[in-house]
Image (tube, rainbow, N blue to C red; front, side, top):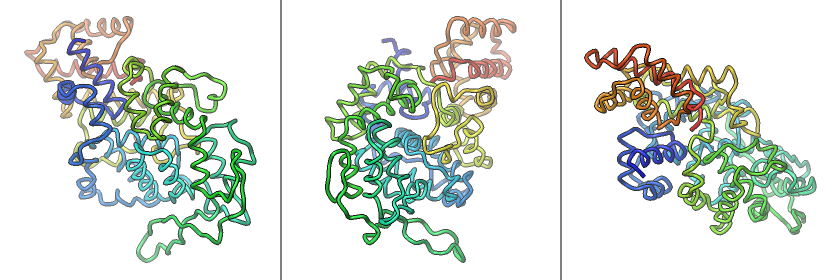
Length: 466
């Protein structure tokens, strides 16, 4: 491959495993080597920062414990996405937030939502079995799915049902009896009694197991019988072939290419059955660990050939754009707004619409959300004073770009090697021709023209794909 092909492939990897990378970062990573970069993403050096939390809290201390207000919590997480040196850690947290969808609309406690995201960072790349144990004990999830109302003498099936339907096996792979028995096994898994808010404010929630409220009778779940508890249910669930397929299909949908919506998975075949089978085999051979699956996936030809085959989520649009233009690299005034931006595009992070999470792919796009996406990108790339834009425009100037064709190609390249189809490219070139070649003797005007072309690229169908 040519050097530009190497850069384009690395750009693809960094979009999917993170939120993009600058040209300098891409050059550095290409020199490092593709497989070495994959390993660094999966196992980053300890000295790398997981976001600039301390710096953010110095200027915005309320972001640490937002209480019932999601805006500070959303800004907190978005700032971590754009400032982290461990991008896959944040990306896998976003992935599990989609799978284990939990929302502040019911919790009214964004502190606990941020604790759940922290848990996803810690366990998200490890054992799926251990992650299921942790999410089962997570106070936000317990409250979200009413397991604090699940008692020995009054079973609540909400958690037991969603564990099987949305978090592991998928519909049609269990019976109503299995739901009931799983729910019985999780009785007594609850939240410790909380202290009153006054006079010192909110106290954190903690998991508590109440043995006296646990149903210790015999249960039969998916054909296995005994005095089963919650960990036993999880042991049985992770060994089901349906679970491996369900989780690997989620991984493929999030990291590789758009799949049909989850409710149709029982009747719709996977987009690439061969790729999915390879991921499933890796998952099962490695004792249900996530990291080996991602390693195989990122290094596979099916991943490398899947450029621009999934529509960016709103969180990816916002974080990727902010990283590209290097806005809010410092937690300056106005940072509270960045957490809200994905909401205008249809994805209120920390507050999904239901336990099913968000519908992805083409369902991210409607007339309102598309306008919000286009305007967000255009407002930033047209601002040639932003640090990232200054760097991009200086590089384009150094490359000697002059003609309309060169202007369009350079702008697309520096926005992530966007692959414009022939018709789109020609329309952009025709638009650029109306003002002729770039005149670098008027540097400010030349850079403004390039910013306008980048804004137009941000409005294309092609740019909505990542």
